[in-house]
Image (tube, rainbow, N blue to C red; front, side, top):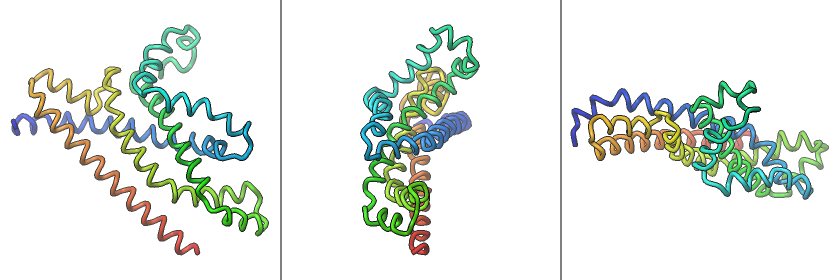
Length: 229
């Protein structure tokens, strides 16, 4: 290992890691917001309500993220309506194209996580809420969603880690996130193994910190639930 060379390029690796975290943060935060109504609809007992988000989820879970990224980055620019719209300043920027694609992709997975969590809630808890006179909206806000959040948090944390690793695909649209920055550095010093080893360490450290953060959140939610009882 050329440790001196690795230390020399560490600032660039940190720069790429920051961009990676920005992409992942935007994707999983906006994805969660978009997934909540979609997951609730997917858990509905009404077939026509369940079917509304089905096509969206089927498409984004059934096609590779790389294909979706190429469709957004290369495909949308071919439409005059897109180029003439207010969205064009964002869609011609690779960062926002990657962030939007990752958000749409992870929304489908988070919606399914939420659907499974809602359906895993014991029916007795929901019936008790209704027996206390709660409306459907109040039961959803105060009983169902908080309970589903505790059930679905481990799966959501796994999705965040998966999106961290999937963010490396953003390098294919010229973004210098962690993987893209690594490839740029390799083009200058030709130390392929050393540089990818360093990038791997960065991914491992970020994953470790995210896992620890989610463990703390799980612990806090567990304590909060016990105190609520």
